[in-house]
Image (cartoon, helix red, strand yellow):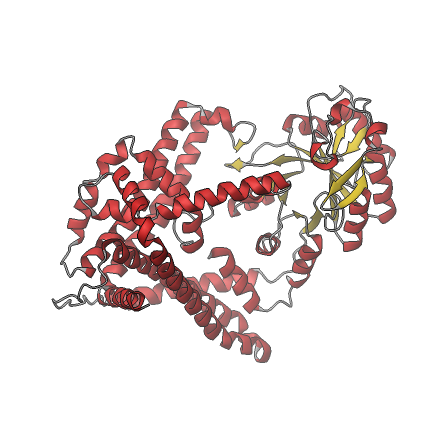
Length: 589
């Protein structure tokens, strides 16, 4: 405990003493990140689309897109740029911490030259070690340091949801995740070792980190946990204190709430940036102190004279003013009642088996606006409500849906989460849905053995039940959906994408359903301009539901329609600005 206190005390002392150096470094990093790296990546993406002739990238064409020589070259270049950015960003912090803890004078030019001398390893096979290292630490970095380039880089939820849907998948996921976490933690010191030691290679740094973790890993993790805990406590305390004026004004002087909310949000945004930057600085100090055993080194003997930046207060005031004006305008626009449709994914699966009549009834009773279901064509040309191509996951037996008749399938009992039910036909679903007066979103699963009359039979069935003007039909087969729209212009037809990169143009459909990881503000704006609906899937976290309902997308597909409905009901004109601020901070940070 005494060692930990000494390391923490020295880290705080160094950061305060060299505060102007840290200000310069972090300003340089943020400017480079937001004004160069992000815009350049957007330009590079558009250039790749133009050269290859694609309008946008989906799971259907991504393989051919990535095999294009120009795309391969640009992707390699982009990966190299990202690695260099992380290398210089953290390299400066590690070298600064090392010199500060040893009382060594340093200059930015010297540190820059020291980092430049290691660039030779970025053009050798040893870069593979760095790629593996960064990949292993991405989940940790995106959680602890969300303001870096790692923000938003996660495994898409639809993949993890499918993996976690079976016992074997959960076991494999846990095992693989545990191995990756262990390897990632044991290699956590690779970058500080590589940047500080002038003659060591990436491979040697990796091995040194692995050997060091045998003796000092626990101490390092304890200290990093302490730093993170203190950081989160400060974050919470400052948030509570700074929002108290708004809390009372909204209830006693509503006319001043909007301006106060804009000022409060601007202040908190700046505070969050500063605190996350300090977190990076503290992490670098602690990691260097543990790695090089500098905790017993005396404080610097020479007098460090902090440079005065007279323009800094003025710059902060300008940034605060700009953020305040932008936030006031944005918050004023956010005063609305969203009309986002709540779509129950495969019915209401809480307490029911997916894609069953009981799940349909429960979803309708919960108040879902639309109920989504999956259908496939059977060997006799009928439509069965079932998601998987085989019976293995839900029925525990062999059997391919496309090779079976509807009557045979309806006799099979399916199991999920200790519950049992029967497979149903599309006719059964439509009859119950009409009786309950709810709308269906029918997803057509294509298995490759469909009959030529697939679309005419589906259209005729919907016409017979008089639901062509009210129901939705979607599929991941874009050509099939384009044909369906031409066949029945009054039917609302959509395309399902698990992945999308780039603008969506010239689609002859009414909506797209896109996995949440690939939805951004530009796409939402673009689709609204085209009068095309956007359904986002599959949102099962409160934060994700809150985010997309606040953005007023056309629909959210979720396993928890009750939670989504509650969130939507709270997002109305009567919602306090304080709640809107907290929502926005949770989205950004």
